[in-house]
Length: 96
Image 1: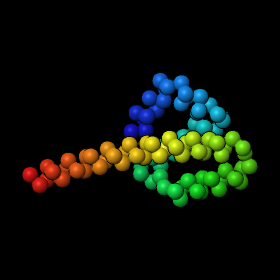
Image 2 (image 1 turned 180 degrees about the horizontal axis):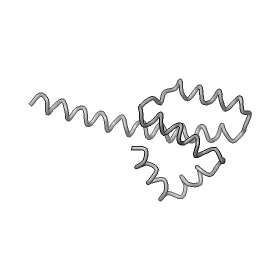
Image 3 (image 1 turned 180 degrees about the vertical axis):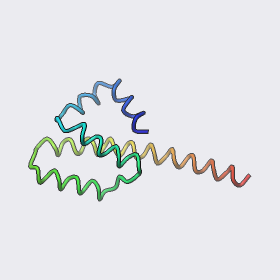
């Protein structure tokens, strides 16, 4: 699912500009891709990430954290809806 989202982002110049905000953006995108793909993205993970940013004392990280949180949230919602649709169809099939 995340790879599909990245394909869209390559076409969209706005997304590419967002990803260029800092040099660390690719590393952080990989971390968040893991959370999104495995459905582990939660407010707790986000809080830990923000604490980590505060320790670095880097102004760009706050802005970047918000943007990536937003994107990962969108991916999470897409995944959740897809899983919901698939599971509801599966129930219908099993009931006959």
